[in-house]
Image (cartoon, rainbow, N blue to C red; front, side, top):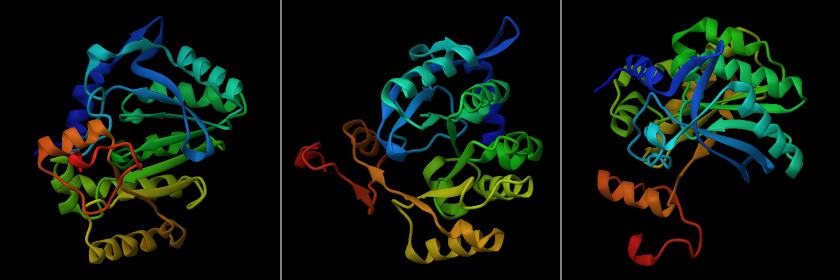
Length: 257
């Protein structure tokens, strides 16, 4: 087992650097994506969890596949893409955006100052551990935070990530911290949860935990494992196979399922 907070510090040293007074980060790619009705996305490198089902396993912890970008160059690339394809939303995804705090804040500020909505997809670990981080994010009115739970219980979290089970509660704390500092639950901040391996009774337990924070959080973005070819390869390697899963018709040969 590992501590995601300690891992965050180790990963930070690899995927960030300071140049000309700016915090740069390693990026894998920039792309248009279909989620949220169309969004300009940038995949970052470096995560503080090692999920055994991760769709981005082939690049998220591989710095050799990345290129350095300062926050303004990254933001300008995303804005150009959003303008070109007439997209309303921009996001960082692929790994954990919150690891590089100053870089992330600069990207959010630049993007939202230009009129776009920024969706922060995060596992919430650092926002739960550091309330001042959540407070800093909460001041951006065009920011939406999607806290993605890796399993609906601490035991499931440990099983899926290999991390200390108690770190699961930091994801709940992330929701609490963001709401406490003014973000509207269910609107500006909301939960998502991987339920590929979850029991129904555990999902109910999870919903009660969310209700205790705010009833609006019970509108969860449920996540299923999407069986991309490279995800199937990882699942075969880790020995996991999700009872709840999604297959794009015609995308995966039957012998792989």
